[in-house]
Image: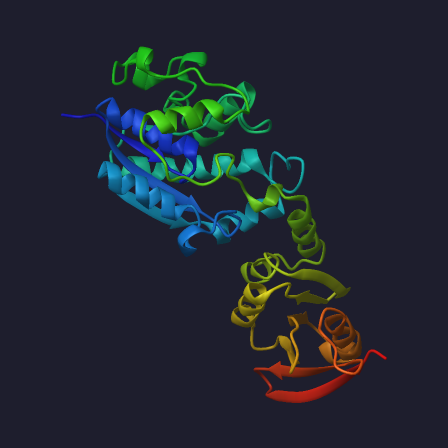
Length: 323
């Protein structure tokens, strides 16, 4: 009877290699993919889930996909172990994921967890102290196998019990992904996202937008959605504006509009779509219109805007003079 393990599969290169390595050692694997709105990958319209599905299909192993955005937002608001260089709560994030994985591991009667973590790859969450802290906080001490760096770490229960051969595990460390890329080539793994992968909360510009929501007690799923594209402006403590940069942004803003949002579209000439969300929008119509007109093509020094609102119905043509 094979020993069963649960692989934490992000869809990135490291977790893909770790999953393949342990699978080739004869361990029965199931994979779980946790995702949030903060994933930087957009392939296939489902983040790195595209790559997670790809590798599990190749290996013919089950995959469970879990959207944890709503729960994760609570961590972003107040992480016990603080933020990284921007607004990334990396240690709290890993503890959260490990706890969720532990529940599913027990449900599926798996013996241990496999991750793609590499010692020293991420400064906040993948140093030796943090790896131990995360395991302890999650109640998984000795049950997390990191096959890419295992020979540099203390032997885990799976190694001590002889479920996996330590000699067949690897000793990768550091921030360079070149060794992983060489392995991928050797193992015939050609389709994977940017090796560094990542979370939007590590991006300085995006983090400032999230921080703005936090400061105004507006951090929720619908507001985070409109942070991911366009130009962002805070017009008042209770009003924000996003102006599209291109056709893709414009479409996303239209699709993200809520009933009380104000949508502005440029008429007759190329220009952006803008979304205003918050209270007392009518008081800022002139300022909003002027900002939108700044990014639109003009005819005779003017821009024609269409103002739209779902509830209550509102359609109005406004002429903004730029002369």
